[in-house]
Image (cartoon, each protein chain N blue to C red):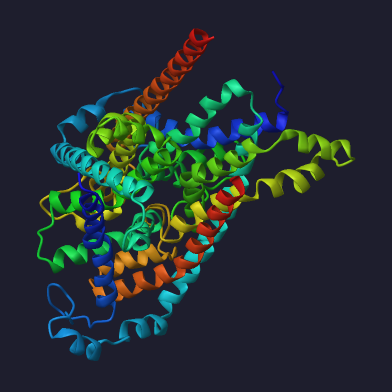
Length: 291
Length: 273
């Protein structure tokens, strides 16, 4: 196979099916909604000059005027941040326990963390619907224990969304932290304790800083997909759960307002650029440190 | 053997209980005789029987499987090519753009990928159906394949390829006879990853599927939006079972291969000594 073919085939594929569609979104976000199929006025037919003349930022201005969108972006950010922190709180002890487990267990523990990752995402979210509902298992258990008298409303609230995100993205948090802790020399921790640190102090002053890269990588791996999440808020969240992925979906499928949906997508990407660049920088730093 | 502290044992137990209990509950209730999912009314395989009668689900399962096999196979070829180009291709015009396009889909929210592909398909007048889902799935999963394969390519000794070239093989022969067997495990895991991603995808398929073709996740999603149903529990149980068997087998096979390779190395060392 010629080198040129080798380069051109995947290159062209991505140009046509990744870059071009993206430019179309950008273009449509700058055009008017029309009651037609496709429901927007194409702006390319009269050439570039006419295209530029016709561009308008109406959809973006609309997004700033209607506070639904602002609230949705802010609430997505808040939900993504809180659930990333919760995932870290849940994931760190598990990764720590794995790194301290006997060697012969590690391969099995590793497989147990990876297995849910291969299992259908949709099914894992769905599993919580039966547990969190008013007649669900959790409420039955709490009533049986006598802790509550009336069932708690958890399904269709933000709490359920947090649980769903923590549950589905937990492996993404555990694996990089485990990798960082696994490389860590345990004699450093012992040295700190010999020099008079309590176990807690040694943990905060030695283990946590040395596993920083894993924490940062895991947090981004949870935060980035959580921000644009659609399935979890639409199955576990309620009508009050505002997340931008859900707004985009509804704008497109229910309101059929393609230009506004496209503008929502463009702004979501602009917000995501910052964490993505930070994540890449963290990964690069880590690679350089290893060499 | 070092003893684990109570804290570590507790955190592992609670952590894995959290990861696995929801799925076990789901499996348990799939054998419930009652239509009410939360009330236990005795053991029954009734829902599995009804599932096999449900033609809409069976059709969707068939479409999903077809899409997953075709798209993951194309994605594996394209992704391996892309990985080879990125690791071995040297410099070429637009390399930065190329590697950007390989990594971007990994972090792109699914709603955006789905929306943009749909707008492209409508723009070029392609009817939505199996073909459009295959194109969409191939595009995002080839990037995952290429990341998996390139990590293997980076770590392997280039002089082996050069030796084959010196001994008179053409570049393609060197690739087929030397490089491919070495990167084969990564290519296979890339294919598996692409396959499961395709099986599992709801969002991108919802945008790119037409009335002519519905995939299983789309069917499941529209069913569970209305609430929990025992039939979906049965379907989920079957899917969880298939994945578990697959993952456990794959890890056992790779463990055995690693052991065998280790034994061969040891035997060779003994022979040399």
